[in-house]
Structures are given as C-alpha cells and as structure tokens.
Image (cartoon, rainbow, N blue to C red; front, side, top):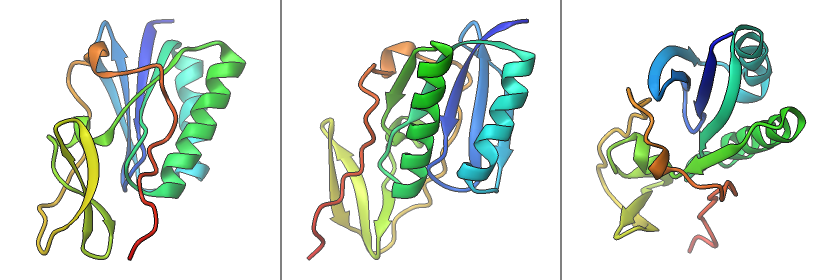
Length: 152
C-alpha cells in the first residue's frame, strides 16, 4: 500500500479530503453530505487503500459543528491508529479571504491574529486543497479554533 498523508477541510460544503503522496496531491475526495455521516465512510476507503502516515485538518474558524466533528473524528483516529495529527487555520486554504461567521460578521486574519469584523459584501471564500502540502504551515496544536465569544 502506498504511504500517504490525508488532509481534511470540513468547514463548509462540499467537504474536501486530499490524499498526498510525497507532499503532492494524489487523490481528491469531495462530498456535500454531512461530515458526521461521510467521514467514517471516506476514511474506511482510504485506510483500505493506503497506509496513512499523517493526518492534517483545518481547525477553524468556520462552522462550530463541522470543526467539532472533524476534530473528534480525526483525534480519535489519530489515537486509535497511532497516526500523528496536525492542524492549521482555514485561512491557509482560502488565500486569507474573510470567512463567514454570523450575520455580517466575518473572521479575518490580520498580522497572524484572527478577529471578527463587520463586512457588508465579503468575497466568496472558497477553500482549496493545495497541490503541494507545506508541512511548515501546520502545528501539533490541533485544538479547534471556535473564535466567537459573546456577540453584541
């Protein structure tokens, strides 16, 4: 079985899973289903086809439930299969565009700090799997970035 790394972006629909061999994209899997329903099925297929060496995911900001589901699923898989888990924020996957929070509030990243900002017409923030996985962009701190406190 080929040795691969797997990257998950579950912050919006469709969810995107990238399978990487030698840092280069080998396979792309997309689904419009709920991550809680489809992640176990996708990973069953991946684990039957590949020897997964590392797991990566976008840990937020974005949909609270999507972040939580991805984290719990990937953290459990990491522990059970002894596969290291890494994370980075979602801005790595959308060229640092604002990410929808709630109403007209958007998450923005300015000087490495993530804040919320009111934006009347924000550009569509599409998340993309990179063609080449840059390990330096990821951290072993995999805790989800929920980011929203009290909204006034």
